Length: 638
Image 1 (spheres, rainbow, N blue to C red):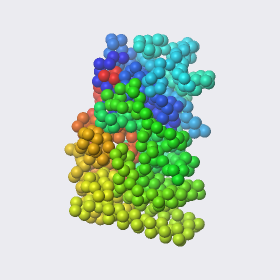
Image 2: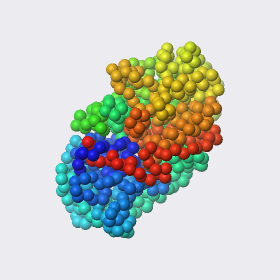
Image 3: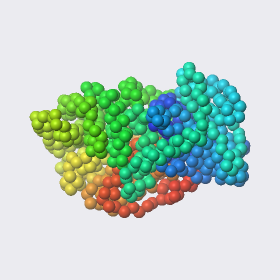
Image 4: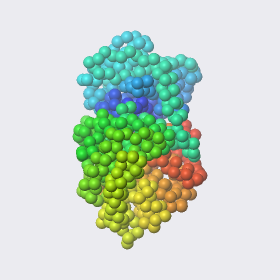
């Protein structure tokens, strides 16, 4: 694969997954990122964060002149699923490649497997499968062994404890360590390729029946998505957001913030983080949204995971998918990073931070699940009471806050608001329990009021008429937009209106999208302790739309929401941020925070009766077909 073409943009990718792991596929049929068998496993294809030499698997029309295959003529998800279809029209015919990861079986177990079905549509098209596994985030050249012939051929790539079995066609040794299979498909003909991870000490599994797996996976997603209760405006966008969120829910109950690491918030900068873990905050907000849309099963699984994982006396802000506590951050020096954005990190140094807001998000999600019909759980109640005891001793302490700053701890206003939310939701739940004493409720209500007074006295700047990012400060924080949404103060309170207007005035970009907080120092003196800048944070921009609607500015809210919808890529996905200068998505992708915020805002605006004025998506057609989005999707690395 030549390295002269510009790199693909983040939004040129699409997600496939199966509640166990995930992969990203570029518009030219290249898998540039895949972690098997779990979201947080070392990537076997890491070209996304480097070059072709760090691993990829491309299935696309064959080219023989040294150039790269063109981007697909069109792509889409098959119905309401995570099954991706990409189609190419060539001078000799048309071909479709359908990519998916098999759905969980009846025991809720999902195979660590990627299946690619090549289908001839018209004429005859020559297709190439170029396969270059590089386990260990692109650091290891595996031992290759080939067996079998024709459609029973296998290629086994082994590296230490991990083995990857490629089946379906015989792949011959190619250039630069790549294995390649060339073949032709005619109209109506199918060729199935599969990649299965297995422990290297175990025999290779049987090759899957790819077409049967495709039918089962389609049925799984059809059944799941049909449970949605949302029938309001922007339903297709909301349902795509929900499906994406489901794809980030691990079958054991944990929920990752994103399936990637180190996609930069600032291209070329240091703001590159590993999001393949379960943040209590992000997971709770995902659960609350899914419950709102009619999906309570994910809340039940997450609550079971939560009660079996957390220790209230030593509450962490994030955990590994299996409840792991050791998420030590390290740098992968061998990877040059996405478009040269270094360092590439695995693990997350924020794991040991104090973030008091997570208590509020957890309690809010649990109450939402209970309101949706989830039966109260004694073990969960015990943990909530233990958390209350811990927080009662700790709530006055400074913390790193929702944005997990790497600068000094501060008394963040949003953190204190969410502490209030924790006790408010806990009181509501306990008031429903016959065993709760009046003394307990009285004490908690008194504490709730004390916290409320503390925030109003110390977090509000009467001179500027706005709440501030932290006590005694003057800077703003977009998280303050949540004050009316969580019920801390009513939307018609002049302090709330003043805060919303101040955030819109001082944190909005030229496009009207919202920054989390100011980043204006190149020497590391930003409040987050980092250098450089970042893009507009998409969730915060959705929050502004919510807030505007709440204070009676619904048409303006709808206009902003439509502009945000137009930022989605051609298959409806959003990264963490939007770079207003480069007009592109930045940050890890797809991002749960952005997807649940989209769905929440759609539901909230529907309640306000706003009417959509659709805008064209960025660089895509209004009908969702591919229109040159992948023109930059050349070889991995520049």
